[in-house]
Length: 88
Image (cartoon, rainbow, N blue to C red; front, side, top):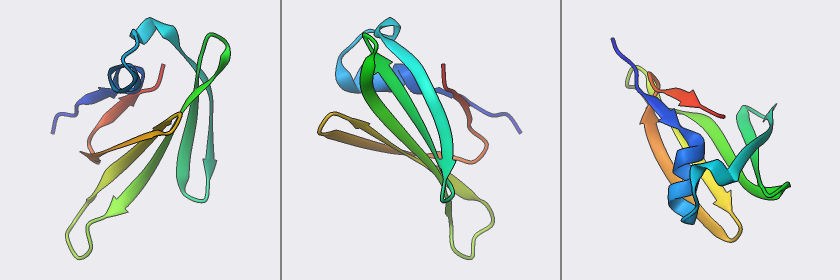
């Protein structure tokens, strides 16, 4: 089974209209089953990504749900659990 890599900084750059090189990984922490990752732009907080596993009910497996907050803008994506993530 092959897995795909989802590049988080590229996703944030596409959503915000910036170049990927303008974003920098800041920190990552787990809280209440969510993995929360913070990114900076120009040394200041810029975006937060929340990753959580979503059960598919009675079906085997599940999905990852990503929610990114860039200022007042919020975007989301659901990806298969086989997805790998590029955080930096």
